[in-house]
Each structure stands twice: as structure tokens, then as C-alpha cells.
Image (cartoon, rainbow, N blue to C red; front, top):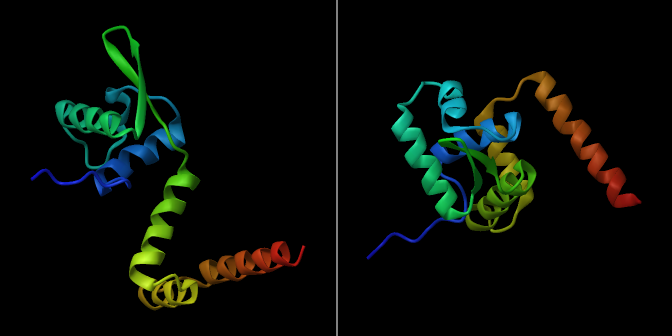
Length: 128
């Protein structure tokens, strides 16, 4: 039986999406040159074609190559991934997710200040 398609990108697909979200439309060669560690052209091309088939990318011909573009934005993709994790692993508990994240990520003082600022902004929006 074939493995069902996951609606969220794999780790390798996410690497490619991050490049496309940052740089915009790219060829396979453009993406290949930015991947760390660098991958073979045919490996990157195969993965991007699979991503196209999965609906993660759009493409249009450009000479003998294709120009690929992310079909869904970064916020929507990451939001869906976090929402999925929140529901599956933390039974919808945002505090459980945040507590687990803080326990396992060892955030710096700057990151903690940014987290506090984000919470304050969220509270202000909720009050409006």
C-alpha cells in the first residue's frame, strides 16, 4: 500500500521552501547552489518535481529549465505545521507547547525578551 501524502513538507522540502520564500522564484540550479550541504542537481530536481506533484510548488517553463515558486506562503505553511503539532502532541494546549519549547530550547535572554514582547502584543490585540 502506498504511503499517504503528508500535507506538510518534509525536512528536505522545508529546506527548499525556505530558499524560495526568501529569494522568490528560482530554478533548480539556483536552489541547489544555496542548499547546505550542497546536493546533486538531479537530487534537487527530483525533490522539486515531487514538491510540484504534491502541490507545494508551481512552475513555469524558462528555456530548457523551469522556474519554481512556493504555492503557499511561509506564515500559512508554518502555522499549519504548528497547529498540527499543537493538536496532535499537546491536545490543543498552547501553554503545554510553550512550556515544552522553553524546557528544551534553552532560549537566550534576547529570545526571552522577544517572547515576552510577542505575548504582550498578543494580549493588546485580544483587548481591542
